[in-house]
Image 1: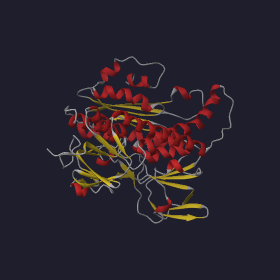
Image 2: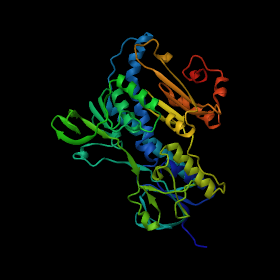
Image 3: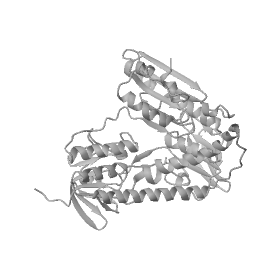
Image 4: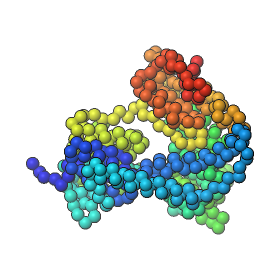
Length: 448
């Protein structure tokens, strides 16, 4: 039998790689993990964690205003961008160290170098080469920029957490969740925000009611949308970045910063996958449901496979891989019924099928329950805020096919409902559940 340096070598210390390496080590495997950046991956370093902290920061401006209706004297808050950036990065570094400590406790060797393939069992890291029986690729994704004139003046989500000055005039190009969330963050922090999207509504692929209600709420908050519009050129001028759009009817817009949030792609360019014979399809590593590549001993999880690009999904895929290969407990992740949230303002969350997907699946044999109302929190304020909730029900089985909500605390509410949906709950089950009063969540069990 061939002797290898490691039972498992993991390339990438992000969410999926960390989860897989620790789980494999718990089964007695000799494991190493290589990372050329901070430990924690996109989520911890430049993604969901620092972004959510900025979401919290951006909400305080509205809280000051809403407090007046509850008897608090009007305040004149003063926001310090550099203080926020410093605080966020301090937390990022704290989490980075926690992940390093956890690897050490688990018995996983951390190699702080970028790893590349030499052949299907050999990895080069820095000035040395090592071999591994099994290899897991968990390198995540990276933001991309469209190829237009002046695009070098735009930034990506990677740079959003390190801006030296707060951009008072801010533009976002892209209507996905990253663009929508940063548009809301910067608006809440006091910037004049313009969001540029190719379609009529943001969040393509989400339920239409979610997209429309978020966009309506963001517009009420003062965000300007340039819909069905394409950015053609960026010019750097003394006044700022001049954004020139396709079509003579679209007047240019001048901003201090432009976020290009037009897409992400698997981060594969430096791996030398061809030397390992790993198949790549449409820019992503091709895998079977159990995360195996076309090489039987090489696996891949997370965003580099471009299946469902969410941090908890990468973690679950990594653990399922380790359980299967090293724990001898064969299993793989079911990518259906996964809840997700958009931390925009207003917030949104969803689990299950969109109305369009449900109609494709069961035709018109659906009942749609929908309500829109003012949540109690805003009843003493002058804020024009609404909650939209929606249930999609199969008439034949009475089963809940989709749950969607836009409004305050959306993510916290749907997390619990996702359990019920994935267990096959019916509308009758919802109706038989007593609501918590007064709350927004109770509306889901009182819809008629």
